[in-house]
Length: 118
Image (cartoon, rainbow, N blue to C red; front, side, top):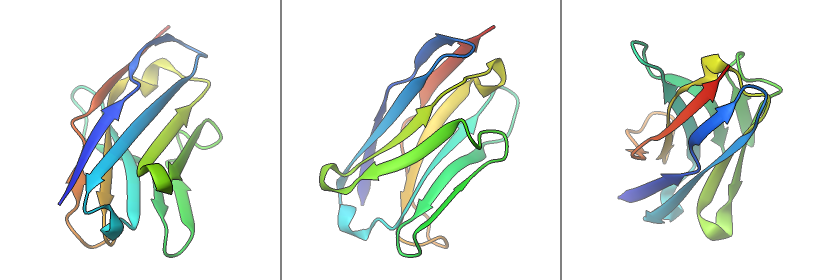
């Protein structure tokens, strides 16, 4: 079992930047997939960015390509989402997610609110 604690959300003006962090504890040696999702009010949760360590794969939603960067610090069991050039439509609750494989049911963070004002 993996426990995840997120931090770094907040209120920022359009064009600004934020960095989200997700610290993992527990059975972290099993983690191969790390991802960030977001859910805006009245919308479904969507994948924002993902890292699959075994294949060296990193992928982003089209809406954030070139603006967001996902990364991991393995010794610290922490992953990050660097968000730049933020837009009001980026406003959502952001969740980190980890799993052993793409097919497994993984673990979710508690969510952190990101609000971008126009």
